[in-house]
Length: 133
Image (cartoon, rainbow, N blue to C red):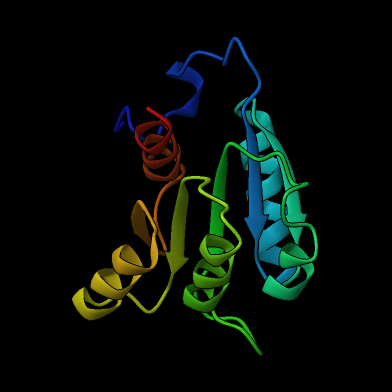
């Protein structure tokens, strides 16, 4: 078995890290929340960028996880607006529409990295830990 996919071999976190997930798909939001809580993270969720931006300065997250493809406002625009509002929280874009061009635009917008979905849970956890360190 690939150790990166075996979540039981990873130690629980000593200090709870607060993640903020912005994801329009309810099933994805629910499954990611369960996965991340099981790994010792606190997680707050928002259904869209507008809902998240209304809480600017109040979310208290250590890392943002932002879906790229959402109605009305995509993840790039959410990040641009958050940065305009001086939110410097490290962020990871999550997308099923990965391309090098999208990655380049995401990094320019202020994302620390881009996660191509589908990805195993170990890949997501590793990316979060790398982004936070």
